[in-house]
Length: 126
Image (cartoon, rainbow, N blue to C red; front, top):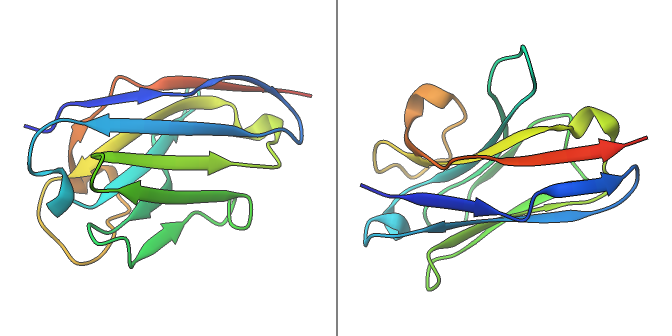
């Protein structure tokens, strides 16, 4: 298993910034792609960003390109999501996930992820 714990969510104003962290336990973290997803009330869980196990490959949803950045530190078993120029439509519960299989790419669908954190609320006020 790869237990995941998110932190760093909270309230921000439009145009502000937040940094999310996801700490993983277990020795398999460094071999797994990681992803950040978000889910707003009444909506499906959507990909925000993903990063391959090596960090060489990343993916960003069109809605966050140029504003968000994903990074990982395998020595600390932690993946980060730096969120800048926040908008009210970024409001959601953010989840980090660890991929089910060992891949060289960054998976972007929830079904490719086997482990999830508990989620952290991000609220952006207008």
